[in-house]
Length: 456
Ligand code: GDP
Ligand code: IMO
Ligand code: MG
Image 1: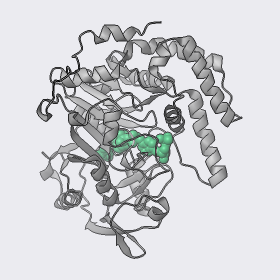
Image 2: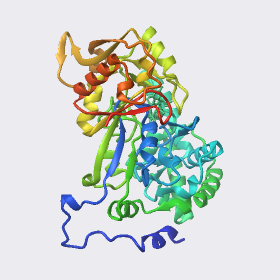
Image 3: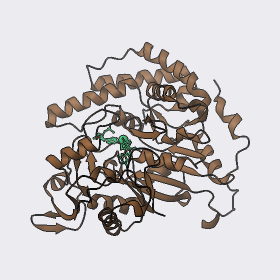
């Protein structure tokens, strides 16, 4: 079977620069704005993307899968996005799922259909899927659970994954036995053989794994036909977007810096690069075409799953943040662990990502506190340590040095500009900005789109 999307869509593309033609830094083309999590996830990236997406032409996901859970509240309606870029709500924009994303097809269609019932219009016609993206199969999700059970039995602890098959699917990709969208849409006989081989490979590792191969293949064939009209060569599609007429391109990071496979709190991380490099490798965007990089941080810290969390508050403060902030995972329904804002990690995230501005969300959750603390440094054996430790045993042991601020004890949820905020809240925000060394561009005071104070 021919690859139906290639000939049709490549006809009018801008050609890559001819041999000998040099591009200077000034004619690099359109720039992509990137939105990234600066903590352990759930910072409110969906809300920031939704805000920016009202003006975007193209909104892209570059990594992760449906382990992500991004909430957007528009006109009182709450939408959850896991694989679809949150910007898909903007009916004037196109959305792109890039090659760096791992796609569970049943999850993708279920999510789209569910949001369509809530009012999301025409998403299927506005979604482009890269032919190089890898697939997550149902058995990857089962294996994710089996691996967690194995960790518990062998090490007495799990990672606390979302069980969406993310680790196993990226493992298949890295071990070069994974299957991609382009494989599914090409020769199905060949795809079926490779699918069976992959199942056997996992069954030789996990004897309890049962897979109804025929049933899976039947379903995948049906999904393939629903997917086919959306599939493009992502590299050429992005090149066209970058070098064609002026376009606003937005990249929505999933997960977050401290969950990054290289820079996060390994091994309690996800399996992709959730930092700025992931935007380049997961979409085929050259570094010169990266424009603004917006870091999203809550005004406190949360974490879902297992792993060190130096500013965690296992006390009344933690409970208050959890309840007032409705800190429950969008994907798994697990309660999020809560603690004070940790500026050591946000600064660390800035070192890797080079944030050009920060969105500080959920300030309103702090409205009722008498005093508010911010972690500014770590100490080990009584001595300040100059870096964020790589070793998790060390991170477990650090003692946090805090700055303490008086609470403003005022409802900020109706504030729409800087001057509407109480002076003590302004003081808190300015301290954070100075400490990270990055301007704060937005301050979030509520769930919905309009509850975002724009500072400049
Ligand atoms: P994401 O994964 O980074 O997109 O974040 P999630 O959607 O998982 O979690 C953030 C939660 O906080 C969602 O329920 C948002 O609706 C909510 N939220 C975002 N910004 C604000 C804010 O400024 N104030 C309040 N109260 N809620 C917010
Ligand atoms: P968003 O995009 C919060 C965490 C999981 C677990 C670890 C590994 O909504 O911010 P995985 O299933 O990816 O193998 O799980 O990473 N995790 C997240 N935590 N928000 C997320 O995404 C997350 N994505 C993964 O809880 O600890
Ligand atoms: Mg989330």
